[in-house]
Length: 67
Image 1 (cartoon, one colour):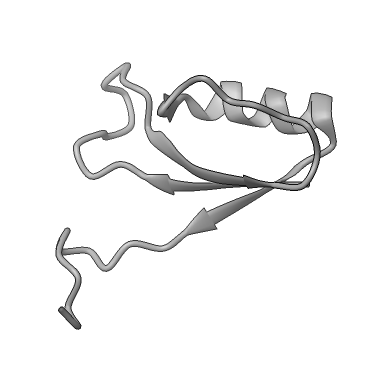
Image 2 (cartoon, one colour):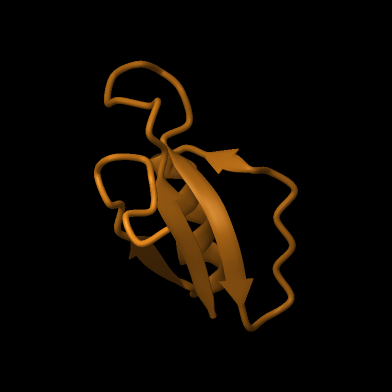
């Protein structure tokens, strides 16, 4: 099972806001009812379910360069 996330643009370390956005889940019967999640919650979910966390990279500008 894989949990696919990306780091949010408006979140920074130490701001006490969820830093990651769930993009998708592959395999298993896991249903997430959140759009944004904290790293500690994400790691705990992965440990409980045995899932791998996949971090998507950002382009750094917030805009798709190809479009």
